[in-house]
Image 1 (cartoon, rainbow, N blue to C red):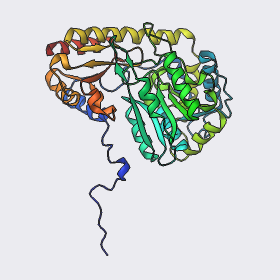
Image 2: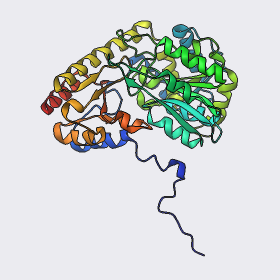
Image 3: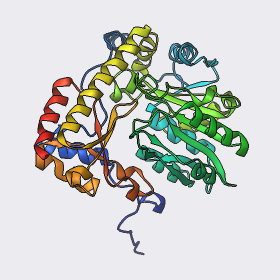
Image 4: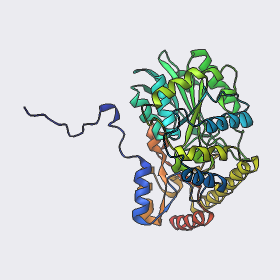
Length: 395
């Protein structure tokens, strides 16, 4: 008996997802020796107190499986952090679970809450793992498009958002501060989202990994959706150490929320990674307890780097849409004669030795973002300056 093996054995729902754009563009940067402003990882280490604590944990035997929900001292630190900054009270024993970064947290939340055919309202452009996680669950995306307004700030159409809620809507997946646009959702926008969640009795999963990177010139500060009336009991809030403490390679994230929802996430998470990052967890607990000056210093440093990159992109001739937070700024390529962001970014290393990321790959409707590309400014100032120098050769 012979077996016919298909050319692509991957299940159909995952075939639209090839190599991520981040992998492709970082490989292109390495191959061409370009300045990599594509993938959002810092090129400096996090706070020395955290690094020292990790080294001590490695040497002191914290190298075996931690508890499934995360070590107690980290869960306590996460709960204390949410109370300190956002006035959210959490029981560290039942309302906190540690995950392998925010990416696992998002996947576990969607897999835990969505049956096949359920619908997930999200905002496009979106971080690429969102679409893959929805597909893995057999659920359906209902994207609402973020569009730049006359002031360059991204917003959405209320009627489009209302229309996205339907009979099979199971949850809203919200990212604020938002990657890739740098948008910070305003209190009025969040109030509308909360109203629709309550009206349609749906859950919310909020990706808030950039919670401490909202800049002083943003239209609004960071406001967790879970703090709004009627939302604590229906919201899973996700964050991570990677962005707040410049340790993206550690992959330590967490989910907080009501005990029943966190339990659902934990029961899925145990069959994904089970546990993760045992010796790094106590170090993240140390980082979460750093004084306010650390967090404001991080914000101010990133804001200065954003301004440095925005000036360089403007000088190079891009139409710049300055972000209100995160690591990223988006730019319009049409003033430089560009029409397709993917083609533009693939050619950019050869043209001037810089790598960026096309944002059209983060849309269900790619034509709406075809002219936009994303640059990361979470780099050393000399790296940003060199990228700006090279980009000026385009105009």
